[in-house]
Amino acid sequence: MVSTHASAQLMTPIDLVTLAFQGVKLYFSESVPKEMTVTSSGTGKTKEEAVNNALLNSVQESIGVLVVSDQTVENNKVVRDLAAMYSSGMVNSYEIKNCSGETTITCHVKAVVSPWSFQRKLLGNSKTIVINGNDLQGQHMTARNTLIQRYKLTEYYLSQVQQSGLEVKIREVKVLPSMRENATVQVDYEVHWNPQFKKDIIAFLMKLEKDTNGQKENNHQVYVQWGPTGFFDNRAYINTYDGQFRNMMLKYLNEPIRVRVDELNTCEEFDSAGGIFGIDWYGFRRQKTVEMSPNQLRRISSLSMSLGCRPGKLL
Image (cartoon, rainbow, N blue to C red; front, side, top):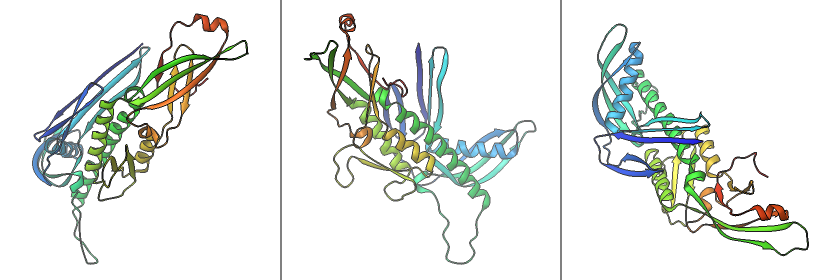
């Protein structure tokens, strides 16, 4: 038995667009100023922990935070437990206003926050440049948190493509003429994208391109194309800033398509030119042949197909 509970919510003061994903509403900020000054608080066991939490809160309060949770239980065992809070921004500079408390410390900070694509850079033209180590640490800590949450969210979306984003339909079933005792059954089927799912995941990829400044920088970049393209159409350039992040995206984007014939306990695997987005909007048609004994053939009353069968169960 498999049960899934997924939810998403967002708290933000900024204009929003909505992305519907597998019944979950995801909200993204579209209109964001280059810098915002906010006052936030955070708690922790130490002053450093309280300040760090205050900085993370300042990003979430100014940019907006996407909260996604998804728990899937299979045979009374949790097989997926996702909890991600994604806010694509970082602290450029901050000032600690005050801290109080003994066992639990609360700190208030005044922080200058910007979206990821407007990260402040230090420029100089001499041997020495004046820097503020605390500000750089704040940038590193908030940027690292953004990358970790972005990784979790991206992996979650891409992992759902084969089970929820692609659909399979049986078009024809027939027995091929043969002089052999066993029968050869041919199943004609097609795989295609669910149009709404494809539209939604493209919106997410475009959001990642915007968040990571993909049109202007190249840092462990992943290129995704989902159709015929002009100069900017039907493509996204996504900076991952990390080799592990990039490899994860490439793995899912180029993963073989797996189709299972449930009653026959067979799972077919095939590669699609161009990866999962190589399956065009109108589908991809294939044929599967299975050899069956006369008794097996008589017992079959229906055939059904599904996507996403597990590697290792290929017959």
